[in-house]
Amino acid sequence: MFLGAAPGPIHEPLTGRRLQPQDVQAEVQRRVAGYLARGVARGERVLLGFGNRVEFFADLLALWQLGVCVVPLDARLTHFEVETLARAAKARAFVGFEAVDGELAARLDGLGVAVLDSVEVARKPPALSATPPGFALDDEALILFTSGTTGNPKGVVHTHRSLRAKWTALGQALGLEKFRRTLCLLPTHFGHGLICNALFPWLSGQELFVLPPFTPEAVMRLGALIDEHRITFLSSVPAIWRLALKTARPPAGGTLERVFVGSAPLSAHLWQEIRGWSGTRDVCNAYGITETGSWVAGTTVGEFEPEDGLIGVPWGAIVAVTKGGSVDHPPGTGELCAPGESGFVWLNTPSLMKGYLDREDLTGQCVRGGWFLTGDLGFLDARGWLVLRGRVRDEINKGGTKVYPADVEAVAERFEGVQDLCCFAVDDPHYGQNVGLALVMPDGSPERLRRLHAWLRLHLAEHQMPVRWYRLDQIPRTSRGKVNRDHIAEACGRVAPVDLRGVFGDHP
Amino acid sequence: MSRDTNRERLLRFLDAIRRPETPLAAIREDENLIRAGLIDSLAVLEIIVFLETEFEIEFPATGLDPGHLTTVTAILDLIDAHAR
Image (cartoon, rainbow over all chains, first blue to last red; front, side):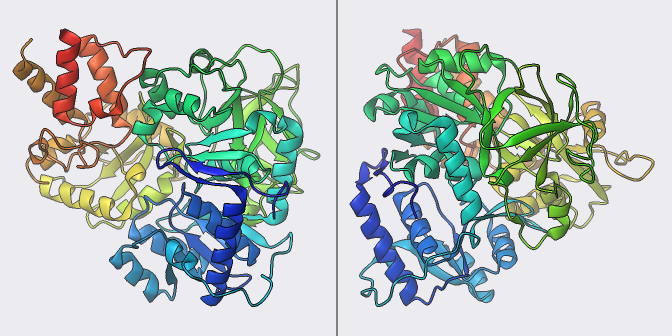
C-alpha cells in the first residue's frame, strides 16, 4: 500500500487536526470495515465528492485496500456535472462529507448510485470478518476527469502500477529530504495536487499539511503558516503566487527548502519574485500532465537563471521533440528536431495512464507505441533541457485550472436561440486566461441574456462560467468549416463585450 | 478624502468586478463579499491592486490580515487607517 513502511502524519493547519501514522491506519481500517459492511466490492468505482481533509485520504486508502477505483471530484461541480460523471464512471457510490445536498442525492439515487457519508461510514463499523481483497498492480486506482463534465467526459485512468512508477521515479529523481514537511494547498481532485504534491511525500512517510484549496485567507497567511509548521516544501500555481506575493509576509524561519510551481506557464519575472519571497533558490518549474501522473520534468539542474518557458530535465521519462504533430509518427518514425528547433513534445514514461475511460478513440489520438503526444510545443536546448513555447491543446488555463471550451459550448448550444457560438480564452491580468464566449444570437434582449446566464450557471461550475460575452453576426470559420479560436478572439477584440452588469441591472 | 468619498469609489470599483447577477444593493456593508456571492475568491487580488493604485496603499512586508478585505466596512477601515 505504502511506498515506505506507512504514510506519514497528516495535519489540517487551519483546524488544528493532526493524525499520527497509527491514527491514520485506524481511520483507514474503520473505513475498510464500514465500506465492506455496505457491500462495496473490488472492481467497483466510487466517487469522492470532497477533498483536502484527512477523511479524504483515509477514504482513499481504505477504498484502495478494497480494490476499489477512486474518482475524486471537484466539489465545485454542479449537480448536472456530478450526474454526468457518475454516469460515465458507472459509479457504485458517491461519498460526501457530512450532509450531501438533497437534490444531488436524489439525482444520484435515480442513477442507482449509493450516497454515503464519509463520517458515517467510519462510525462504529462492524469488526472485520475477512481480510480486505486488496488490489492487483494493473487494477484501476484513480480516474481523474479532466474535461467533458457537461457532455462527453474524458477520464484519465491510472492503475496502481502507473502511480507506483510515478512515485518511484520522483523519489529517485528528487529524493525525499526536502519533502519531509510538505504543504498542500492545491485541490486533491487533480493530478498535481493529489498524486504529486500530497501522495508522493505522504505515502513515502513524510508529514503532510493539508489546506483548503485556493483559499485567499490561507494564501494571505502563507508565510506565517510556513513558519508555524516549519514547512520545507510546497507546490502551487502562478495565480496563487501572485496573490501570496502581494499579501503574505515572507516566511522568516528559513525552513522552506524547495518550492514547485506548475499547471500554468511561469514567467522568469514571477520565478525570481518567488525566489526572493521564499528565501530559497530551489524554486522549480514543474511540468506535469494528468496523463503522465503529473510532474514529469523540472528545473532540478543545479544553478540556473530562470527563463520564460524553461522546464529542465525529465524525472523518470524520456522526452523527444518531433517536427510533425501527427500521432502516427512518434519518435522512431517521426523526424526528430535538432537542438533548439521547436516542434511537438512527446513523453515516454511507465507512469503513463492506462488510457481514457471508455474512450479508445481519444487514447488513440495521443498514445502510440508507448509514446504520449503531449499537445505542448517546445524544444530541447543544447544542454538537453526542455523549454516550452506554447500549446496546441484546446484549453483555457484559468490560473492553473483548465477549462475546456467544448464543455462550455456543449451547455450554451443547448439554449434556445443560440444559433452558433465559440468559447475561447481571453487575457486576464490575475488568472492569466479567462473564459470568453462569442454568440450568434439574434434575440439579444436583456431578458434573453439573463436566461442564458441562468442556464449556464445551472450547468457550469463557477470556474467554467464565461466572464466576457460577445455578440457576433457570424462565427468566422475556415474553408473547411472549422473554428480557429485565436481568430475568433481577434474578431471579438474588435467589438465591445456585452455589458452583463447592465443586462442584469437590478435583476438578481 | 472623506469616508463617504472613499465608499463611493470603492462601491464603483466593486460594481465593475462583481458577478453580474449579484447587485451591489443586495449586499450589506458588513457582509462577507465572497460568501455573499458578490465576487469570487481570487477577485481579492483585484481589490488589492485597486487599493494599491487608487489609494497608494503598500501592502506591508509584514503581511495582511485576511479579515481586512472581506467586507466593505473592513476595506474602508483599512483605507482610513492608511490615511492616518
